[in-house]
Length: 64
Image: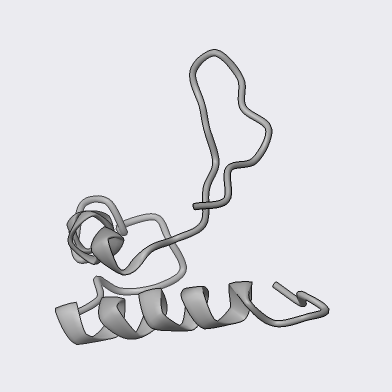
């Protein structure tokens, strides 16, 4: 797991396949997405987002 610089309350890391359920809790929630630029996502859409994020993290040079 790659970790990035962190502060006392925040640590950044790469997305992992195990994050799908946690991302679904946000991306799939109508209240959480109410003011975002997209409608709530389905489980399948979030799985695709997770897979795409994992794949893009391994591209050299990294573009995302």
